[in-house]
Length: 220
Length: 319
Ligand SMILES: [Fe+2]
Ligand SMILES: [Fe+2]
Image (cartoon, rainbow over all chains, first blue to last red):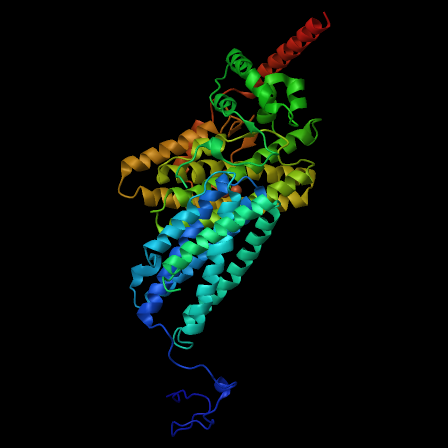
């Protein structure tokens, strides 16, 4: 008969010889339990985030054909894919938050006002509206989402909700790249005061709508 | 933003020149008859002339008349022929704008079908990125062979033929019909690159071809999924794909025929999920249309008539 397998350092008395303060605790875990959102609230917020990412992907998909500037068309291609991936990982988090297996494709607007913001962002479809299109997503919505994602990561339970924090970290990193790209495009396209004014007006109008509805989670 | 745009709404910058799609439509339905081919192209002459004005195709038009497309489409790419450079650029440019339209088509599928399953949206989003790279790759390859964007007129025939309002038909037309054609063309380009020893071209197109196989697979999967339990819709999707296959065989220019300018990439198509039955159908669909001899004779007559017209108008002008 073979000897029973014991964990390293375990004696027959079932106690190891290791001190309780192990390598796992260096550096000491300073995170505290408890955050602002419970499982249900986080699940709702993840559905809100997914709603924004999914619609951005679809809207930009529609725009590719009606934007005349070739580098803008091709720049959007990769961003569409990254929004799709963001929506996908957010969806995959939902069953882990007790929403049922089918919840992987659940998206939810926080309120009618935010759905209206998305409709307004999607509205321009003429080829002479690249400024309005790009400003809506890259000057307004994406910076707002970065703020919302970072706020969630800061305020949620740092240990219990770490999987959400991890995936948001990744999305924020990519979204920052998108915002930089959008800014470069707009800086280049808006080369007269009149065009810069169009960009400002579009941004101001959408930001006002966002504030009025409380943003992506409805609780700005 | 509205759903379901028309091909003439595809936005382009000022470098691009749009060509009327009628010419491409006629080319795809020509019979194996010299007189009929000559007559059809003579009728299109004013439109073809207008389309090439100010582009790099103008000298080709001046040389061959309205039949220049017959010469460029129906003869295999031959590195030793004197017009090899122009013809290679013409093909590169055609692929480049084709990739652009493929990007636009995949993007529109995201907007036009908001209720489609999530996995479908993921596939289309991925395809957007892939087609984006293809546009970038072919823009560079075009420069690599001495060309530039907008040097030839662009036909939106591809977008027009394949973008159905029914998602099952759209994936059948775009992802199986057109992406299948892309497999044939890219395999041919790889052979050409090998023949001229151009490793840059060979390797880039090799990667693009790998992506296109994935896109055909998306199509094969989604036609099945969208038509599950609906044999009538499945048959409609298959019929639509056959129609696209026919339209894009340019009268046998892409076929199994020995005189084909673009041979069919059987092995790549098998790997991409085409069944033997579908491949047999493709063999049949692409078999008819004008032979290369018919096209050559028609091109010769068209060229003769074109030069006669030019000579006559020069005489009138001097008188
Ligand atoms: Fe492609
Ligand atoms: Fe493709």
